[in-house]
Length: 249
Image (cartoon, rainbow, N blue to C red; front, top):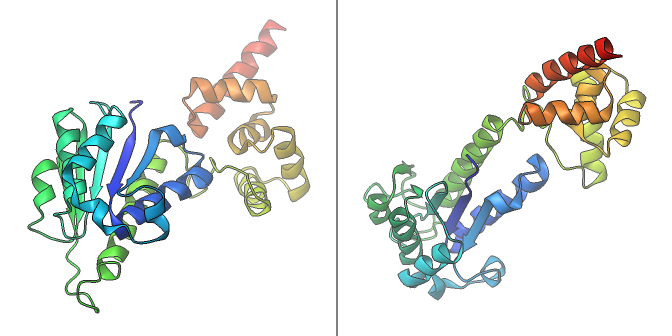
C-alpha cells in the first residue's frame, strides 16, 4: 500500500503512457505523485520525434534512480518491439531495487520480458504499414493501459457501480456529470444535487453520503476518512456516527 506506479516508454509507447496518466488525474482525482509517466527524451518527445533518446539503456537506469523507486513501487515498461534499450534499462534497475515490474509488448520473444515479474503480450500480427508500430501495436497498448488503470481505479474505490464518483470537477462538463452521478445514486432532482454539490465544492462522495444519511459535510468527510474512501462503507459509518451523536445530544 502507498506505492507509486511508473510508466516507462519511448516514442508512441511513452506518449500513450503520458495520455493514460493525464486522463486519470481528472477522471478519478488520482494523486499525481503516485502515478508517474517517464517518456524517453522528456516532454519535447511528446510533441515530436526524439528517437535517439530510446537507444541508451543507462538513461532508463538513471530515470528510475532519479525517482528513488523502491519495493512498494510498480514499474510498467511499454515497448512494442520488446527490445527498446531505455525501457530495458528502466526495468532492470527497477527489478534490482525490488519493485514489481511489468512488461507490455506485442513481441512474444521480447527481451524486456526477462526483467518483468508480469508480462502482457498481445499478438497483433503485421502492421498495415511495415514497421509503424503506432498502428496495431499502439492501439493494443492503449487498450491494455486503459484496462489496467481503470481496474486499478475500481480497486481503489474511485468507482461505485459504474459511476466515476471520484472525478475532479475542473470543467463545466465534469460539474454537470457530477450532478447526474449524484442524481442517479441518490434519486434527488437536479436542483437538489446542484445545491449539495455546491455546498461541498463538488465533493461527489461526500454529497452522496449527506443525501443518503442526512449528515453534515464534516461528518461525511470523517466517515470517508474512516472508510479509506470506500463509498458504501463510508455511508454505513456515517449512519452510525449520526446515531451516536443523536444519543449523546
